[in-house]
Image: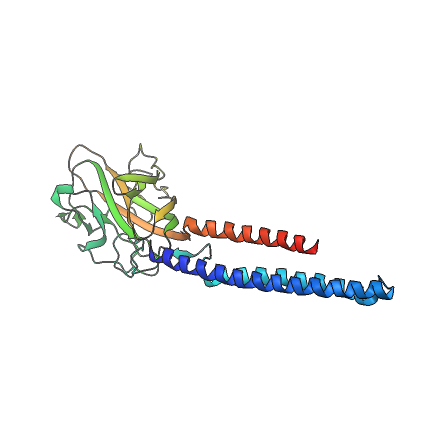
Length: 325
């Protein structure tokens, strides 16, 4: 059982102990109230005043007492559940820096600052091109501009450290995959995640996926460039002569969602890139996350607990009606 499960189990014990104590108090009050009512009715009949003001006041008092008991019981259950920390909707921001679950832009350090040209990106790897998993920060002069100041800094990464002048060296044509990992906290056993990014790539961003090992859990296909699936690297700062007039490529938004990721487990985001051509040529990826969140989901035992509390309330109501009769 997880630490979260053990904590909830202990809170369940406390909850039921409180409920039992409270129910016993209610039963005692009901019995006392019934005895008092019977004595009062006997006195009224003996005195010939079956509708005396005292009898009416007693009846009203018992109704108020029952209403107070109901409100108190509801408050007790609410406070107990709140103290147990069972609140639904606890959400974390996946863009918070320097956390195991952080989603980083390409080409930045643990605090979102742009890395220097030629640096190895600590958050992204590739699919073992030419025997190396490392990715390197370098922009081709034909690609859209990096963002190296202010918020949302992001730089291009490539699968090779080779250079050709000031540009990245070439790699084989085909599909290249870039990867980044995130690990969700153990505060909850399960998490529902949603994340959105803008993605550019040379030549074309092909597919973005949430991976559990080699299993694809969810995917999205980015907007495709208009030049026959080429020039997915066009954007602000791209030379006007590059790829003709294809200057309107949006890069997204691309949203991924999945419910039920396991707390404490590491997952991977895969970015597939198509590198077109027949010979080695530059390839790269540019990823900027604009939102990301994970909402905790309680264990199934919590739902069972809520059902049990509901049953207890139902039985309590039946016992009350029986006592009134």
